[in-house]
Length: 194
Image (cartoon, rainbow, N blue to C red):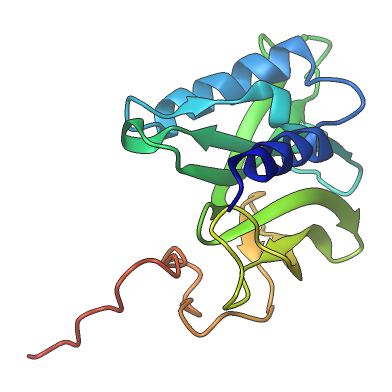
């Protein structure tokens, strides 16, 4: 693959993910702290490639709306790999006239994609939850550039957790929502010999 084309794709994907406005300062700080927690000590959060979506259908105890953040951490193990995460934050309400100390409260975070797995370029709210749109890898796609269109839907659980809705899975992915999907580069699991 031509390195120039790979660089152009990475720049395009960063701009395609970015909202016209960058993350609000307090939300960028929250996402940065989450990135530090998720990191292996080498991977870093790229706020310029993060996108956020205000949500109107999210409510629960102490909050009446929220935001979804699609974010990328890159440089795992000091290399060129990246992972994408979807984080769901509540926007805290005032209670009995007392303003919250922090605006945002993390409700849920899910690993949703990354290099060698799938790349998401957008998120939208529907009556069923959140729909991530992007690309998965076809057999002939180079590692830099998945090209097969893909949409994955997440619903909101009772406590605001992100739950994968029934959506098409690749043969190398698990149907168990509690186990992360394996990369197509990962070896198949060893059969249980007990």
